[in-house]
Length: 83
Image 1 (cartoon, rainbow, N blue to C red):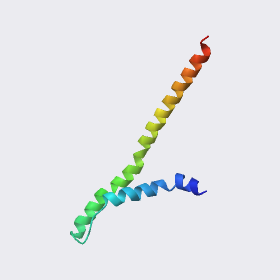
Image 2: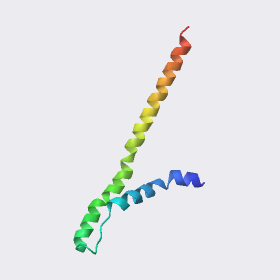
Image 3: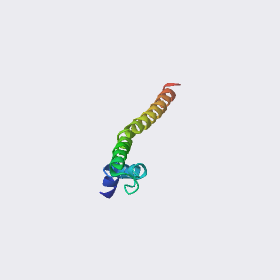
Image 4: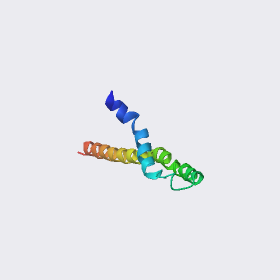
């Protein structure tokens, strides 16, 4: 059950928090509060975008894997049909 949860549901919040810890590093004590809130709002879109656009990596790797698998299948089929 732990592996299902760790690999199924937990990576998205973990990735969001990991990216957010690098991107949203604003100290409100050093700046005006309104300027700091504007910066946090603008930067806080980056962690969500990293989760949403990670789908492109998934599709890319799936495409490369299927392409390799079909190449192996064609080679196997060719070797069986040749005398």
